[in-house]
Length: 235
Image (cartoon, rainbow, N blue to C red):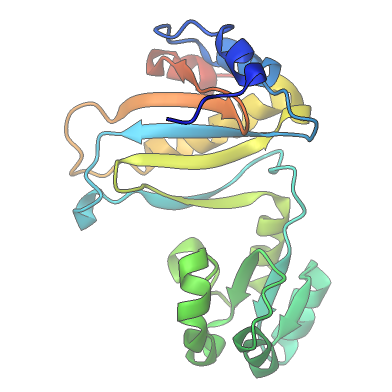
């Protein structure tokens, strides 16, 4: 087993291992336990009472975090004609049609998110093996296959993230940077958790929120008591 570094162990000692904290305490602890020289991300992990092997228990969606994630997201848009101009004016970093598809086929991947108009999907579909495993393939369910290019680009630039429950029933998502401070991080977490609750599958039985933890990217996880959910959403 890999031995944790000295700073990690020192920060781990600040946390009561068996205690489940309230949201404010947990987020502040996550910030206090961030020791790297760079501006660490603050991430949330939520364990849900679902079995993702069953389609009717899949939890997947998008949310626009009110304070963004603290990262300049590079957006590529596949569009033709007027929609190319619309994408450029909305702030897309790269815009093209078949020429952009060909560029990606040669190995170019200097972007983070992709949007496509529906009429481009016959061409963009050729990129499934390249973009799919990276989570970058445009998807109508996530709002990235649309003729409303202006809205799609602006939402992603403003802090829209997508998430999907993993095999173990856990959803991971970034909530911002350490430098945001507790208030902005809590606002982002509240927006995310409200979406998670709204997406509860009807087929999910028993306890839906089974565990929640927050951590800085290099720091230890801090458990949160789901019983404090109402306090968070009423902030």
